[in-house]
Image 1 (cartoon, rainbow, N blue to C red):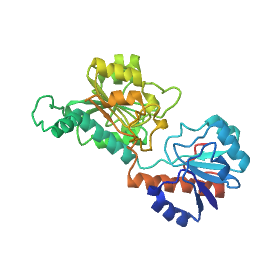
Image 2 (cartoon, one colour):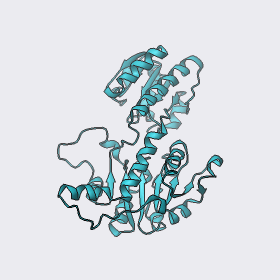
Image 3 (cartoon, one colour):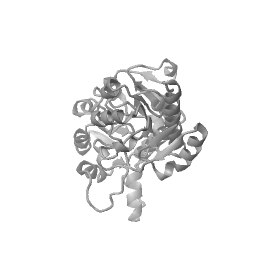
Image 4 (cartoon, rainbow, N blue to C red):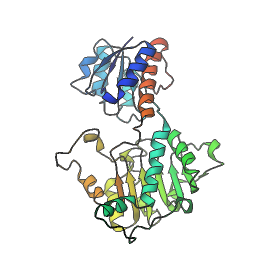
Amino acid sequence: MRALIYGYRADEEAAFEEFTARLGIEPVYLRQNLCRETAAQAEGIEAIAVNAMSQLDRENLKRLAQLGVRYIATRSIGFDNLDVEACRELGLKFANAPYSPHSVADYTVMLMLMLTRKLKTIQRRALAQDYGFDGFQGRELHNLTVGVVGTGRIGRTVLGDLAGFGPRCIAYDLRPDDALRDRVEYVGLEELFARADIITLHAPLQASSRHMINAGSIAGMKDGAMLVNTARGELVDTAALIDALESGKLGGAALDVLEGEQAYTFADHRSGRIVCRERAILEAMPNVLLTGHYAFYTDQAVSDEVRIALEALKQFTETGKADSQII
């Protein structure tokens, strides 16, 4: 079978070479992401692999269906760039790639430690040869309460990683996992906000979860609480977050994702132009850690993304179903 690979990256080369050979797939590689201009490249190809930056709106999906595409697999867990209703209406089948949860979970705990130990301030002042104690005193995780919002694969792994540090853990999920009840206390979302010293987000982006962190929810949080977001930027109202950090209501934030980041992430912008005003404001704050959507980015996760996406396309063409099928 042939498969068109949109958004092919050099770091995926080894994985694609291994898994296309193993699965008997003839790949057609395209460096560009799926967009209006590149949709036509799929003509005559049933199966395509895309990524989180691909334009999967109604217009593009309709064009793909007209060109003969039947199966789509994204090399990502999230698929908030997909028009789900249009995909169903057009009879397209879609799968995601639930890669290693340890990649994001490890990164999440790292950010918690960096926040609680004020590493940004320590590093910056060390560059100026300031090795004093003033302003450097941190906190220990075992004395804190961590609130985990979302206990799917990643949230569950975060809880496992935290076990060795000994914090009190509470969690919120629309569908609590009974298997976790021996190590975490499930509470309502408002109670979690009120009790947690650190709030870490691991929820999917949906209409109901957009801006779940807003001025109202922040008002219900503990004074000095810290926020970690390695899920989706749009879960947080950035303007409300900035206000809370400037007022001192929140004690810090560590963000690997930020709303609107799709306009500039995964590209080099060292030209000196400010790509995002809100990002520049947050970057200037000593108690805010910002990274550019790297939590997922490990050798294992990249290999998993490629393998699972290709396996899904192979399964679709052979049986009409896939293990990681969403639609």
